[in-house]
Length: 214
Image 1 (cartoon, rainbow, N blue to C red):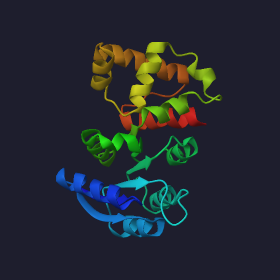
Image 2: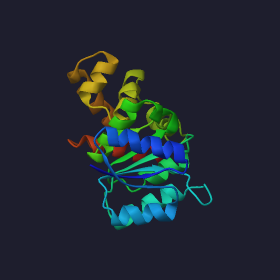
Image 3: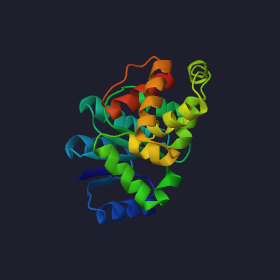
Image 4: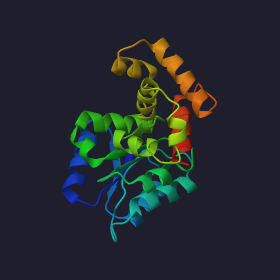
C-alpha cells in the first residue's frame, strides 16, 4: 500500500515513516511543505495520503489545501489529516466534498501505534476515521442542535461511534448490545436526521457528518 506522508517536524516524520514501513506500508514520499506534498500526491499516485494540516512555509493550512487540490485533480483520493488541535473549520472543509475516504486525527492519537496504523488502513480502504473530539465539535454546533436534540442519549452514542467509522459489530461491542439493536438505532437516527439510509457505511458516515456541519 503506497503512502505519501507530510509532516514538518523531522523527528515525527521519521518516526511515522518507520512505523508505517514496519507495518507493511510503502512510504513513497515524506515531505515537509505544501508544494512538495501536492507534487507527490499527483505524481506518486499513492493509495492514501497522511497529511499534517500545518506545513511550511507559513504553517497555516498548507497541508490541507494541498490535499484538497490533489483531490480536485484526483477525485476520491483517500486523505487522513493530522492536527495538533480540534480545528472545526478545517474538518468542515475536508468533509465539504462529500466524496472519498477521509480521516481527521489529533496528533495525540498517533502515539498509539496500533490506533494510528488502523486509521491509515481504514481510510486507505475507503473508510472514515474521525477523532471523537472533532465529532463532538460537529455535534454541538448551534445550527445542528435542533436535529441532534431529537436523538436519545443512546442514539447519540451510536451516531458518534458510527461517525468514527465503527462497523455495526464494533458499535455493538462498545455499547454492549446486539447488532440488531444497532441496526434499529441507526434506522431511527436517519429518520430523525432526515437522511436516506444507505448500505454503504462510508457514504452513510459522510452524509451524517456533512449534514451536521452545515
